[in-house]
Length: 416
Image (tube, rainbow, N blue to C red; front, side, top):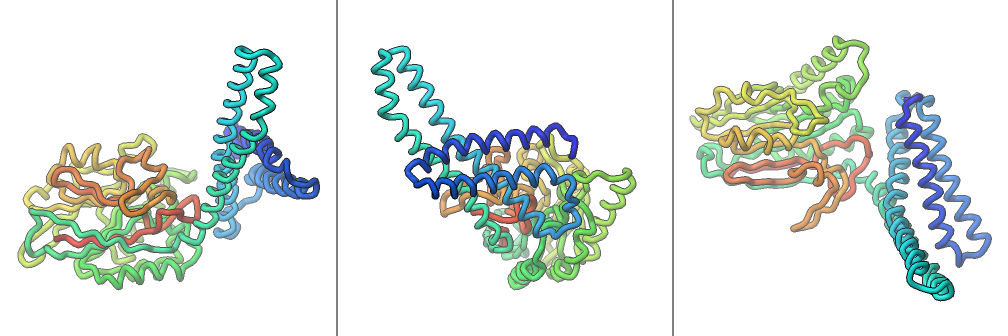
């Protein structure tokens, strides 16, 4: 990272962004007194310079040995400042374009006297207005990201009744808990995580299904949380599958054998927790003399940046005789790309992966997140013909240590 060209391009862009935003701050600070201006300018540059300095010395700090909470908080604040300035700069750019058009129009269509008079009469007030709008928008984004730090353990129960005409009578009323994306390597508050597990167990579900990303990168991230997640149990069992982060693909390993050994440990942890990990395979659940199939595959994504380890053909083989099938597949893009076209008798697919980007808006009848421009199905229930997909918003978090609008989720599905 120390010699990465991208790293230095990013730092250079941040410096240019700081100067660009400062021009708007100077505009809105014009009515203030000299002392107030000094305080505003000094505060802005202290904060901006600290962010750049930390980025420059970051490769030398060995943050991996520091407090996880401190590390993620610093990263989140710097990233929040950066994106807030980017959002604000959009408004500043609109104003610059407007002023450029106004200047050109003044030169082409008016006399010099008329053009100068037009620009003097409107330039300051309009620039101040858009500068204020940009700073408020950027500040609002930064403030919401800071607020979101307190939401990362605010587990919400989503109760979803799902009706299927072909569900065997013995399974009507079956209660399933669906969780996804634990990301144990991000946790910093064990008691808060445990409260979420207590919520799960209070639901007294018949079946618990986990759709991948137990860790961020390495198996040892679960060391402090084994005695939390081993509390998950259900009469019909706890079944799990792997997500893209479970393979250790985002870590530089000293050898392929080291990477494989880590994956083997991750897989073993599922068994140590009392979960049955489904690796391109299925199990048959029986109740009242009737049967359904639960299929679990390794990560399979339609996106080129994520792996296709899953083998749906292998996992599906032998399930055609069962009237109802549930598929656990981590990445929701799998549904449109392979499941619906090739496996129309898979009744319900459960996925996660997107986290709802941990940022968005959800109100009754409306939901939005930037992740929807990448994933067509990104949170909640989707239906096509007789097939259904449910995308869990994630139990944990990664990267940004918080949630804004999209809270961590425990899904309670009742088959009717």
